[in-house]
Length: 321
Image (cartoon, rainbow, N blue to C red):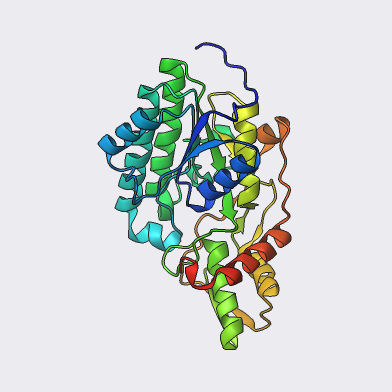
C-alpha cells in the first residue's frame, strides 16, 4: 500500500455526501459547506436509489467525486430492528456495496464509511475499544443491522489491502440533533423521549411510560459534533481500523428521561414497562484514538437536548413523526 499522508482536503473538489438529507448526512453537508467546500453533491432517495446498482454506477460516472462520505443507511430503533431484520440487513448491504464498488471503479481518493457502535459485542468490556470488533455475540435486537455495518467496515479494510486506497471508517455512538427522526415506529431513544414527553406536556397527561427498566447506560453525541469529527478524520487520520466517535461519557436511560422531561417542561410521573426489552446493558465507546488525533466534542448533552427540543417544536408538521 502506498503511504498516504492525511492533510487538508481540496475545498474545490467534488464531494459526494450519500444520505445528505438524513440526520448525519445533513449535518455533514452543513459543516462542509461552512468549511468552504464549493462542490458538494447529494441526491435524495427519489433521485437516486442506492439499492439500484446500475443507477449508482451511472451516477459516479457522471459526477466523478474525489471524496465520498457514505452516510446513507436504513436506520431505526429497537422496535423497527426487531420487526424488519431482513430489510435492515439486505437494504444496507445493497446501499454500501453499490456505493463502495462504484467508488472503487472510479478510484475515489478518499472515502469515509459511517457505521454504528452496535457493531460491537453485546457484552463487550467497557469502554469499548476498536479492537473488540468480532470478539463476541451481537445484541439480538439489532444484529441484522450490525452485520451489515460490519460488512461495510471489512469492505473498506479489504479495499485498503487489495488496492491501496486510503479509505477509512468511523463508528459513531448514539447520535441526536436537528433533523432527527421522531416517528413512533422507528425513532431512536432520545427523539422518542422528546416526542413522548412533549406530547404529554401539551395534553396534560399525568404520566409517561417508557420501555424497559431505564437502567441501561448510553452515550450520546450531538450530530454537529459528529459532522466536525468526520472532516477531522478525513484530514488527520489514516489507518486500517475503524475509529470510534463519541464523548467518552454515558448515563442511564432513566437519567436521560429526566433530562428530557426537564428540557420540555414536563412535571408529571414517569413509569417503566419492564416487559419491554432493554437492549444492550451498557454501550460506552473508548474514544482515545480520536482524541489522540486532536479532536474533542463541543456540545454538552443538556445543551444539545435543549437545542433539539427547540428544533422539534419549531418544525411542527414537517418533522418525521
